[in-house]
Figure 1 (cartoon, rainbow, N blue to C red):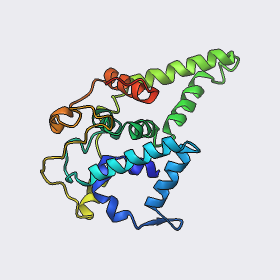
Figure 2 (figure 1 turned 180 degrees about the vertical axis):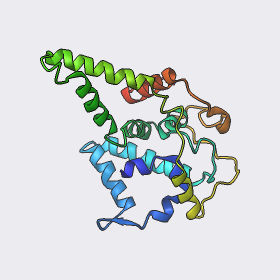
Figure 3 (figure 1 turned 90 degrees about the vertical axis):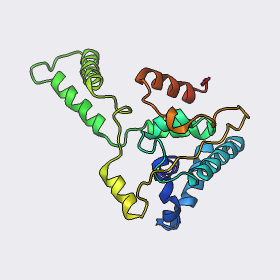
Length: 217
């Protein structure tokens, strides 16, 4: 949960305000440290890279105005477009934001299975029933609108920012820092101009490349 809160650019303005809040006697910064230690396990090198990326991202995020370009993007899309300067954290963020936030998918799968394996068709071979259930479920998923492209922040989230005195204002955002490897030009493009709708196939290809470690973007 903590590592879903910190890399989400939408919540950049409120992090300092909730830093002192405690969950089971532990503050958010301490939970963040524990989360990094859990992910890194005994890999000291990875822990150092992830901690550096997280610190660099939080420093960059503190400079963002409340209404920066791309604030309402799906967090995964933001990291695909703007996460190159933070390569280690980028992989973690994309994996976190790919997780479904609820168990609704599982419930829909059970409903599809009940339509396939009915009282009349109760002698179906298990493998056949499994394949038919997958076809029914995946066909319905393909018919749905693209989640990434149609994503929008809820009214409740915007109202929460307003209640915290973080109402959106029209300001130009800061450019992200250059990648740690010294690659030029990563943060020099017009931030607002770069954030356009990404074709689903291209988006999936970028995410797969980053997560699998063969990102050449």
